[in-house]
Structures are given as structure tokens and as C-alpha cells.
Length: 124
Image (tube, rainbow, N blue to C red):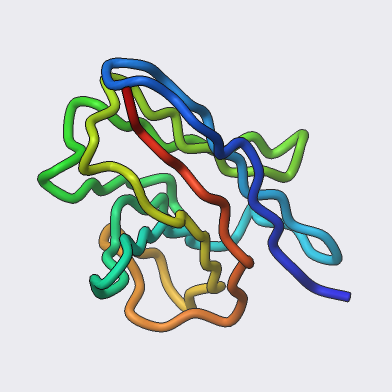
């Protein structure tokens, strides 16, 4: 069964850090573009960061300089290191994957696989 599973969410105080992981089962992430999204209560899902099939990374303005996306081929995971967390980072974070037909520098627009998401709560 091909699926993505996120982990690493939890409760953290403002200014703290969390590391989210997206693990793939049934396929290798090496040739895939992976994007992290988040959805806060009452808001639309928003693209946060992606790593493309050629290793280019992109970040939404609200997380630039605080979040870092990376790929670990040996573990078949893509991680999102989140530092200096703010109250407004509270959301359900989920990942999505697609295998582009050509090398991409930008985040994809469509995806083949989605994870179930993991809750991140930033609260004092």
C-alpha cells in the first residue's frame, strides 16, 4: 500500500521547536517532490514548504528563516524542522507527494499522495 505518514506534531511553547517527518511506505521518495501544507481552524489549507525532485526548496513567507525542509533518502523521509514557533503556526500539518515528469524548481500544483496530517499546537 502506497501512503505517506506524518509524525512529530505536538504541543510546544512559543519560541520552541518541532521536527515533523513525512515517511513513505510502498515507494521511494527520491524522485518525488514533497510539499508540506498546513490548515488552521476555519482557514484554507496553505502551502508551507516544498522540496522538489531535484532538491530545490521553497518556503512561504510566514515561515522563511524559521522552517527548514530536508530529505533523508536512507530513511525515505522528508522532514520539516520548525524553529521559533509562533502562536499562528498552530495548525494541522500534512504532506503531499508527486513524481514530476521533468526537473522542477518550484512546488508542484497537483499531487498523487497525501498524508493524514499531524497536529501542531503552539501555546503558552
